[in-house]
Length: 142
Ligand SMILES: [Fe+2]
Ligand SMILES: [Fe+2]
Image (tube, rainbow, N blue to C red):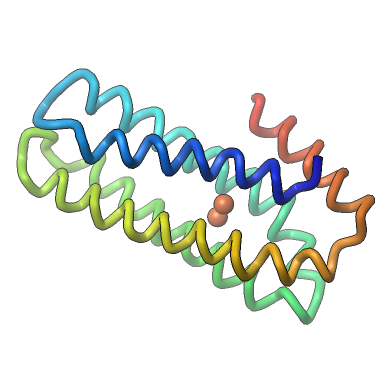
């Protein structure tokens, strides 16, 4: 497996979790649990992705801007997640901010899958693509 497929699989998990989260309502156990799961997914994915996808991309002039842009978006996403965590689950603001997060994350995932993967595909060799996938998957299992 190449790094692109490994990352894409987790992106799908994030998309599904966010889809299900905007269907939840009020101060419910389901909302709480699903949000915790999403937060964990996003945090863990950002760390593993920065280590085993963005780090090698920073080394090439062709992909350094993508890597910087992606990492900056990880920070924005993290801030939104923190904001939601601090918001009362029973207030309308919770869902509002959750929808903003969904929008931001979907934009980020699309950009990675459509632009960054294409650029990275030219910069990384086959060996690197497989090796990065192994390391990424290992990190995600922890
Ligand atoms: Fe990312
Ligand atoms: Fe990602």
